[in-house]
Length: 298
Length: 315
Image 1 (cartoon, one colour):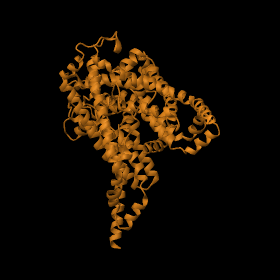
Image 2 (cartoon, rainbow over the protein chains, first blue to last red):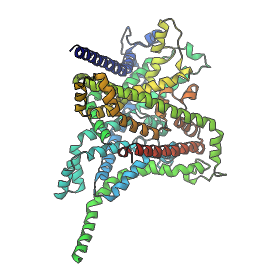
Image 3 (cartoon, rainbow over the protein chains, first blue to last red):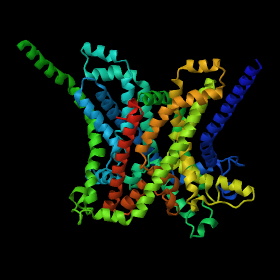
Image 4 (cartoon, rainbow over the protein chains, first blue to last red):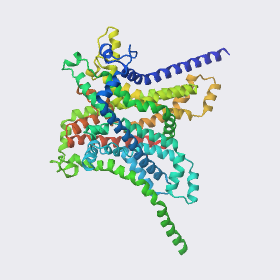
């Protein structure tokens, strides 16, 4: 009896410790984001004097006002580009991915096996960055346009396999019975598969949307004209200027000049993650479910 | 008999009629794969070319001698090897540290029982996965820069001198590992959490009856049952051993030349010499070497996976 209570209390201690650790990890995950938000509401003068803190003495909207006054049209344009690319790109990708994923799950379609390998092979072997860059820019002319920020990501094989696994997990009898009823593939896909795989679709929509929203690889490679800058790329350009100044050890400038753009960077950071933070609570539950199903079946 | 053959013919025809939508449905995907994956593979011939802008990949003249670009590659051998070493080192570190965190999180999540708590902490831990490296880089800068960074404010308040992380390449090994773990540990814990919730609960009940404590259950039941998953993910990561995350390095360091001794991954090296400096053909030699070794690694890993467990081969 005594032994049992001892064991129970040590178990309780362990669980309490788990609660504590998980809380700590969660807070660490949240901290940088809160830090950026607080930083964006700090005043430039205070940051210049005391540096960034989690608890600034005054909070102000000055930075945001300044950002929108000085760079307003640029930012709005970049935001518009980001939204167009995210919405348009996700739409294209979803269509390409779901149709392909459906085709390779059809059981008596011989060509499907080849298609599965055709997609898989690109995961294990690729031509590398430079041939890709030259083909995209020189042969397809995908350069300095919004389409250039969408088409190269049209098909993500990983997401395609996620979707395939999800469709494979659906009860096969349903599809079979539809076939006996004489339904064609279009009907099966659009009227049966799609409504049944909402969680899977939600997951890949989220993955694609994030990929497009967060991307700065494509703008880095394919965009020169300011007209087509996205919000991530604006952030990149800003960081590029500031870090160059701050990290040049041979120049004595860095340690003497206080850079005036500290809080602006935080403000643009917040503008860039804003939509994610706002939409996150609504999408994350689908996401967990979709990833678990997709990953485990793979 | 004739009837049977005729029936077969009709069925064959029917099959094609039935299946034409499948060809149509897969067409966009096929085109995307050809355009952005298979044509670049053909573009590998670049490595044997004397690249000029006008000719492009296929129109430029052949290099003379044909292995000229590889000669360049071997002349820069030490840089190429440094990149290879760094890429492999980071991938191994990322995997080890990342797995320790992901498995711990999954185990802890499966032991705590309050649904509400699990939901909230899971959401918070996934959040970093949704944030771009560019944004993480901007926040990191605000945290650690020498003048206004939070970390250096804390150092100063203890009377210690500020530390300029952007001038010490070695510090970045730690910074990159922390940043990578921070970004992905919540996400990677999903898989392990899924596996744990699939474990037969009667195993635990039996162990409890035999007087095992929670901690013993974790050590003796949960972790051994997670082992196959860890092995599979490890094998998968071997296949990606030579892939460097260019986005991460650009986002966090902005290709800061001071930090290159510890951040010059293969992809960074290729980007720097190829896209920035225009040494297309030379850089593609490194790229080809990366692709081929990557393929060999994947095939080897798959073979080992097959020996370990037939079910777990990747293809």
